[in-house]
Image (cartoon, rainbow over all chains, first blue to last red; front, top):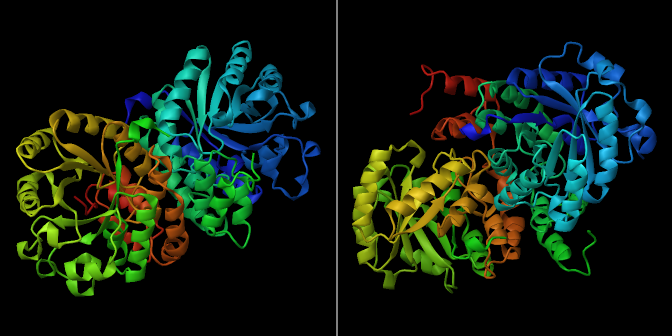
Length: 320
Length: 320
């Protein structure tokens, strides 16, 4: 237990990030039970999907409805909203302005914009749009482990001049160590003194929960997680660990265990995520997991040594 | 990478702690391949089993040979010893003095004595015996999360007056958080200024690797781990993560990946360890995993909510 974490809020990303595992093939019952569980557990936000436009993405037809949230549909899913707020993620270049209702007409409370450091200007333009329509906003800077200092300092200047509420430290490749997280948290606090901070960690090196705790103790407020860690590749920080360990009487563990028992254990039998060796390898190499995901989809899925050799031989490596 | 970890040594416990999972049913080929892999990877010690006496333990007949190491047998298993040293663990009250050859006649280099804080006097008596016969020694104080300050300070006094080389911080229940590990490491350094330190962490809250790194950065030298995390219940810090992340050119990742691919992935299909919800529950409750192990052996193995209710209702809890 840690009294240094009483300022924190949890943002559960099971549907949004977990959808990257199963192409958002979650039933309405699943999503409704998750919402009830998170609400009972005192979780602050549920990220219920993406708010990108299907017109601006390939392969949109096959995806479940959480890939392109529709406000009217959302009202049928969550007819009785509790205290857990709803969030959606958007990507730069994939948003149709006409899809975005004013917040007063939508169930969504928070819109988060994901972008790379080099696109922070475009990200902040979207943030402005959502902010003007009444939403809470965050800017999630991805792949921080691959950003050079000068680029980051430029991004900070733009962010300080913007309306964004919260800025996220995102460990896209799951390669950050506790030391790195302390360093980044301190840097973000120093250069963004008037912004609130968030953290989104991946579990390639089994460090997602530890890194999230360390960010929290360093003053980060919004903590991303997902139930049973469900998320792309190695997955995320586990919601059940956060509700059990954050120092706040609002959080209850039991409703999250109920969700795990009823839905996540059976789902994990069919879908794969978590600490799996090829994802550990991309984590130690500080690379995007896409090559490991391709391996896990092939017959050679357990050939860890070949994969390691390929990834560490410069002329053979396809990544980056 | 962290230059604060170049003083560290790895003690791989796959056979000894992993044996608690499969009753030490490892083939000679398995153990030989593990030794070769660890030696190639630059791992400093391999703990190849227990050196308790079968006369002093029930159920001894059914266990594999790594449960009660015999020096003659060991020579047939490791005919060509490399640079990786060999270690064995003993428990207070289960050692027959007559089983212990002088180190010059044994393949073993290190004998580690596990005990609870209240038995540190008995543990140190055993340490003296092994030290007199020429072995390196450690004292592993178990279940530190359940020890009161006054008891610990008494133990430190006895330890300071003893010949023991290394004193271990053992998180038996996997309940320590990074903050707790920093606190304990600082305390051990302060009160045991002339002893080297070790750390043995469990993975109930997915914190074994992070806690081991944090102990290492705090000055702890001997780091316990096992390949693919194999160990009782939630298992241990993963050897593959340590060799990949400790700052020392001696360590190689590839040989450990080879062991995982050839032996550990198939073994994990048959035997169970790791982050499994009942073990997470005993971890957050700071309890011995025995009740969760019993649950996992029963038909109700996935009934997490019932188990949680039972463990958190004082009049129903069987543990402690």
